[in-house]
Image (cartoon, rainbow, N blue to C red):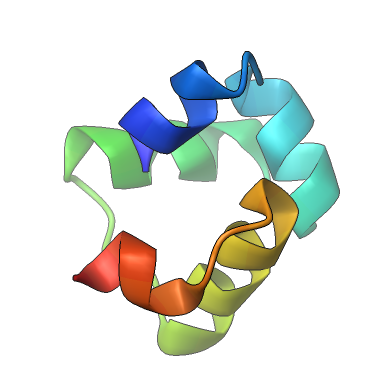
Length: 57
């Protein structure tokens, strides 16, 4: 997720806004301290414009 976000030049805050989650949640997912639900992963994938499989595959 972090690589995809950075490749697109998107900040954690921008991704969080687009996905409808808090910035600290995005940070936690990227650091591996939070385990997002499939619903949240779908929102993040949509915010990145990527298929869900690319995040979990």
